[in-house]
Image (cartoon, rainbow, N blue to C red):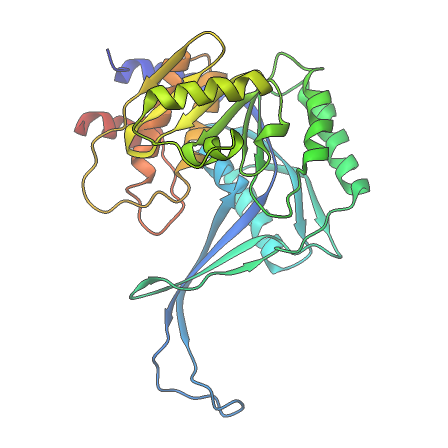
Length: 335
């Protein structure tokens, strides 16, 4: 039987008490409308002037996981990472402050680090060429050592740690993930959930979230059909032989699968109509699954809640959306 409203409400009563840390790649998503055919020309350059309207920002990458956690009712969230000493770094701190997030372990780097920012001009044709900041960042080992020491000192008080890697030059390199592995073993009472775009092979004995494209890359095959649950399980188990722990595999319109060395459990995606925007849906799954498991839900209940939350966010167009309890319950009502 699918999860019921009362069961979800009982789980969410516990999420507010959770203490969750997030370490990884934090970004700002900067959106604005753009008109590229204004017929106004610059006196200085004689080039056509573009007009921008309605600028706004939201948290991206690991920051999107954070804003999903707070939307789910988690009141104690700590972030571990870094920002640049620039306008986007100050904006990120403002966004965290607005959400009530503890950012005391977010280091401000004055030299050699731009706050990672996805600048997204939106025209009548949709999203235009993105302009990214922070693509050449290099973090010193001394600063990473400080971040890791602060994380280690905090882990005894955390219920859940979410581990994120998204950028080409990330906070968590393979070598740094190995250092993190050594610390994780010292605090077995914490739940560890990882979402590592490029370096999933290096994390050990955690819950690793992957999509089928990432799974295929990690097991060195060309592709895995999202619709083929049997094949997802087969190659998932091969990956777990190397990593230990468990896998959460997102399968797009075919749902979500979780497996460990002993069993697999899955939920089917909800039938949705109309235009969908899947940007950030994986972050929603990570946040919802982590919060639910941290609050004491079973694996299957956590998958169902993550599935419902993702169904909410993919219907929010041109934004990295979040899902709250009311929206999740409304999603149950329409399916």
